[in-house]
Image (cartoon, rainbow, N blue to C red; front, side, top):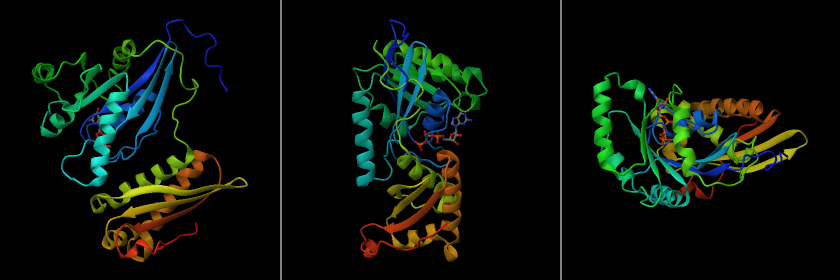
Length: 301
Ligand SMILES: Nc1nc2c(ncn2[C@@H]2O[C@H](COP(=O)(O)OP(=O)(O)OP(=O)(O)O)[C@@H](O)[C@H]2O)c(=O)[nH]1
């Protein structure tokens, strides 16, 4: 274990940073690039981030602890989305600095809804992402003026998360807002999420990849069991959907879709965990006739 306090500069800073913004503005991409490693999953489709993911980046005199929040939901009102919105609110009141992410040239009703959640007593930096998509410099200048009038941001910075542009500058803007103090995490740690969490994230990423537009909106993925059997990891991941029809879509004809998803997920897990994995993926309908019939399809891989 790394000694956290050895050779630390006196003015070392450490604090929590929340990343908020409407779905698809690039929050996950931004965090991944700032911590230099892929932890949180990204996708072309909106709403891929269901759980808060913490990324940690430690530099010579600062430790940033990033909290990636789910997209604020306005279109689909249900219990899950209400809970997600509540989680955004409570995250924002707990952190030292908030990054409010927008997409260059776009500032619509969904952005305003998120903006309404921004805390008054916390520093908020406006990050204008996808700056690479806006070729016209004059357009960016006008956009910056419009945004600066919308909220008392402590800073506004255009970046490109995908291309890693101006991210070091952004991190320098965050630093003074973090309190002086020792690092809360070991300096070589990039995430506090364990293998159990990562297993579900990997299955979720495959579901997004292979279901595309057919993806059931209210899907939830959880690791139900995670056991070490010698050097082998035995992992059970459960996919919860709303309706029996959605279950059939996830499984596919003759179970082929789920088999493909499970196989690829297992291979990724074996690479990530550096060992053999026995993976079972279960699809379950919540709240319907199938609630008690837990089992639908099971694959031994
Ligand atoms: N051109 C361009 N595309 C980007 C940039 N940053 C992110 N993207 C793309 O935007 C899409 C959404 O990115 P995500 O990081 O998944 O967005 P998110 O805000 O975390 O999305 P949710 O999980 O739905 O809230 C992906 O296709 C990214 O590749 C950027 O700087 N430039």
